[in-house]
Image 1 (spheres, rainbow, N blue to C red):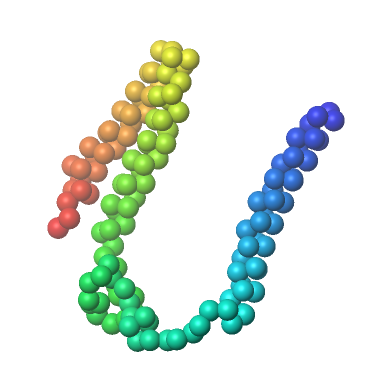
Image 2 (image 1 turned 90 degrees about the horizontal axis):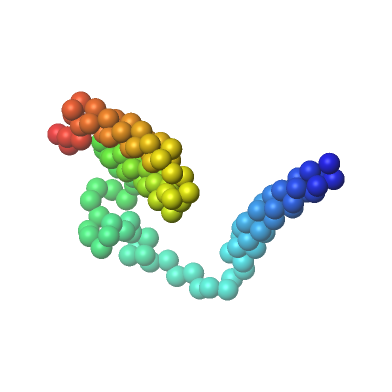
Length: 127
């Protein structure tokens, strides 16, 4: 039972470190931003919206964003997460045996069926 509480103590210590370090860095950064260490020379060119080296289109404010980009972002995340799940499987394929092989085939089959469904539904078409 003593080992059980020791493990929770380690989790508590790691949680405190995970909260303390970013918080202290943010506070330190905020404190340094209040000191006049760097020069402040505003310039209209510096304050202009930057669009990958191109001239800014529209006003300097955020313009409406095309909602079709979200579909592609979600599909990218879906297939990116798929790779995250495939990598550990590929490193331990010998230890998993046929059960692991069949499990990953089912996983890939479900993802492929979802991709085919989205394609036939017209989700991959831009227009």
